[in-house]
Image (cartoon, rainbow, N blue to C red):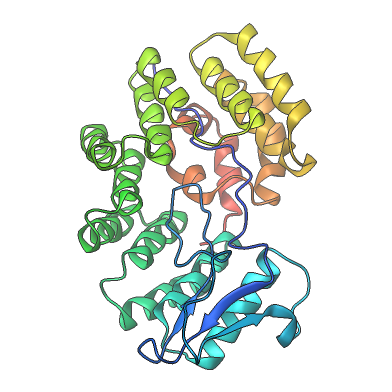
Length: 324
């Protein structure tokens, strides 16, 4: 029987920052800007510098409050404003270009995002996070071969970084190169046995291979600071995938009750229907999830957990509207 793969993460991924003090200008640090943007992407991207930490001790350092340059709101609004201010002060900051690329990628503006990642890598060819995020962008654009190349460069640029190595395993997973993916995930967990993004992706891989015990074990070990909603939704998807329908529905109902925002309901329903192999349900909810940009384009194009949905002619219509 053809296997599918349940979704990897069901967390409401926060924006980079929801704080007012976003970055520090310190001309003594090689004349550049130390960005205080806390990145919190589910793949485990490390922070450039913690936005809630004290600024570096330097007479010339200044903590900028976003209100000083007219920004309002929080989350992505402030992130965008902070990055724009950073680039106005110094356009040769690779971190700022890469961070803007990541925001653009999250808004599905892939051509503009690619330009930012290329600029970041011109400024710093060994910047692992730029290679990492560029790999995601390329996968979203439908270019998996180049995405694997960039993921390899991320891993080579920072071989001791779990996030940089993890993204290579993810791209191998998308490419159905399961042996390579497992080798990479195992190597990440040797560096950090509790690195939850890799545990979650390895759980996906085990599910793809039909290894229920191993998948559920990694899911449990990788829960980290997950909320009850996170665990209910994750268990619902995995249990549905493995055919435990009644138990899956109990967890799914609990996830619906505990959802942090109604905006996530289309994604939850679409993912659950995919894991149940309920095609009519999936194609009822998936267009709504796509319109709300809740189903990542790299998953729509490559994730094995959607393979059974791809067998349906309606899937072609779902992909047709994706930007590239």
